[in-house]
Length: 235
Image (cartoon, rainbow, N blue to C red; front, side, top):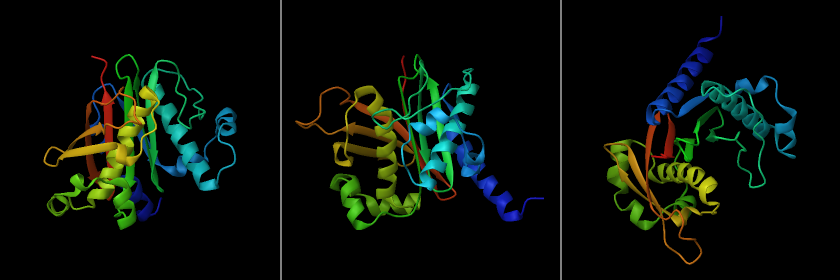
């Protein structure tokens, strides 16, 4: 019999994955769970694409790829190697888009068919607050104008939420436009009641015009884990 703490941990992790599934659109497949799955077999081609990394990062990587293959199978796509590309993002099978995210204790993956979803991005993080220094790095002053009221309603740190939303947005945006974005390149508006976010790139001489529209995303929190997703539908 597993110990009660382990059973409880498994239940909480399953709750987070289930909540992310509720957040994404029909046709987007979400798989995930704890990192213990990384103890299973791995694919040599994927490991070779990693280079020299610390053991904790390698464990996160393995877990993400195992959950990614589970998600691909749910789309009807056989098990497939998903190496790291030159730009350090996953190389998905032809016809597939996806996103992988980790915390120190769990992993989540979202995938879809590129014919239906040209872009998908998710991010998950624990809800611990950001430092003042990181808050300045992540946020625009305009995004923090209602900070006290928003944090009172949500019950967690607004800058950390902005971090999660912008990370999810970037993961959706980069494979489409190959534009490197800083946190200051993205501005977020929130509808707290609907747990909805609008993200747009901030016009500048550095950024190309492509992708400078406004994109709709969603966010939520379960058991101290924040998560956000962005999708671009083909139709």
